[in-house]
Length: 215
Length: 228
Length: 193
Image 1: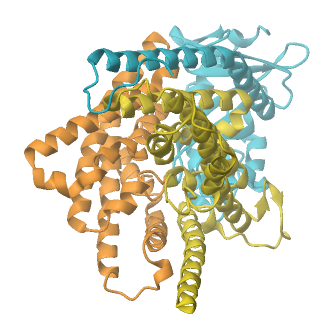
Image 2: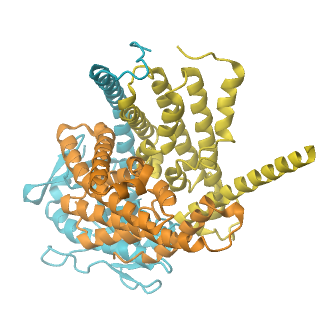
Image 3: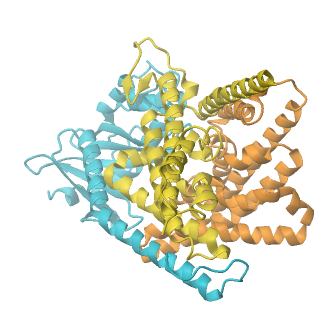
């Protein structure tokens, strides 16, 4: 059925999605929902979890059926599977909380065109066993959720002065409104990318210096 | 995994392609329909509760409600369960004794950023709008969205005069908006400084909506008398 | 359903609620293709065309689904139609202008995952537009997308000559540009009035 479930490769699949290959900050995928629903921490978290669910289920299904689906029709079937799970999530959220559904709006349905999910199905799940695909999905999903949450938390704290609805600052705090507006989304993501780039650059310089030292 | 693996380089048979697509398609269809059926009662319950909460908010004395739709001849007939698509709805509120206390009307119109949907409560005995709630809005946070939170603005709708003229066909004084602090008559809406367009939009929404609904409601008031 | 005049819908979709700068739809092509002005214009044209066709099909599908009372099939049918339209457009462009086909490269099939197109179909369904309003909406959305893309391309071409710190170069800089453009477009609010 699936490849060997050796311990190290599996945990590595999980970890890489969190940091090294983080979908939003490193691969820069799935940005549309990342910016659109990250105006509060709660919405960002809900969106991240919904996307992770779809990613997990579609990776699992694609991986299980990978020998059954011929190459020519694979993209069409992947999209069919992803759209199905997105529809499932859509109705599930409506049943749990209409208010959350209204907050996330059409972006729940837009999970289906999140390049991240199709990307993982194509690049990984179609070539790997169920166990590794599941781990990959969990890692990427978690990385995506963490990234979204980072955006949402910053935007909510600066833009409304609250965190999950709880006021953080004194009444006199003037919220930085631009942060909850679309522009704030762009700026915040740019800020986080900056942080990642600086780290990457420092790591490269350190590696280069090490090489110099060794010679 | 089912089926023999396809040898690399060999063209897949059409049968394999059909089998994959149809098989996956059927599986997906079954899953979607099952989830839909499974969640439908919960969703309907959520919707009804949300509507009831909004109605009770704009009609403070109401304890039960019933929805009506416009029937031919501008009469109103009760709607049980799902209303037919495209019907215009109004909701009647009744107190514990089953007496009609007022009607909640949905209205919408263009705001600063996008369409705003509101629910307002009309008390026919006082000939005025007595409650107001924003259902959906995308106004600018911190500025336009003060139409939902600003207490001075919301106080406009505790008693907004919409009485009709002698013919009963149109409001005597159409709802109008005035600059903040200049409200003199009960049919005026005091605006919000810094959110002029949004507050003017609300006044326009109410003006258009009351002009259409209030004459019809008053003409056929008896249609609403029966409590559920 | 709504009585909004057609020009107002067009202006709204193009300027006030610009799909890229206000709704964050279509960001992948926006950040990927907006390097060169010529490619940007053509991408905008292709997207507008796909939007128009998808909008009409989405309207038809919605009528059909309402008639058979199967709202849960909406997402799947929309995405199927969009994928097919993009496939057709790709074949058409390949035949008519191979140079353009090569220039657009990978981004053409990526229009399928362009959230802007699916977003358009979903939004117009939610708003309950009739046929003429759908067309105005699609045209406005396409025009707005093209406008944002062209503006971005112009800015980025100019910035290639400027001195920018390495850490900001690339996507981070484009995002900052997009943020500033977004603020600028906020000035259009109230235009639809």
